[in-house]
Length: 91
Image (cartoon, rainbow, N blue to C red; front, side):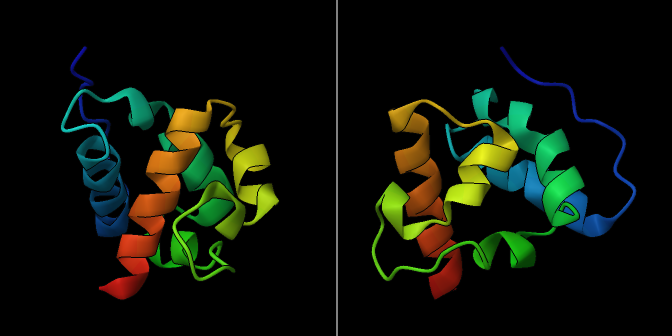
């Protein structure tokens, strides 16, 4: 279902939320990772970009600590994240 926008302390947090929403075209399943991203990556997409150490779009191109700190276990979600992070890095 549609996730209600939380209160954002920083503009970058809203940017992060909007990015998470865009990952599944506004369904909001990825927003469950918002708090973990705030905690481990300061809610910053610039910090999220840093987890990509490979040059591809596979989950293995992302540091394992990213999956662990967020608790992402579904292969499908990892793939979506990996592709989205790769796209961020090309911006």
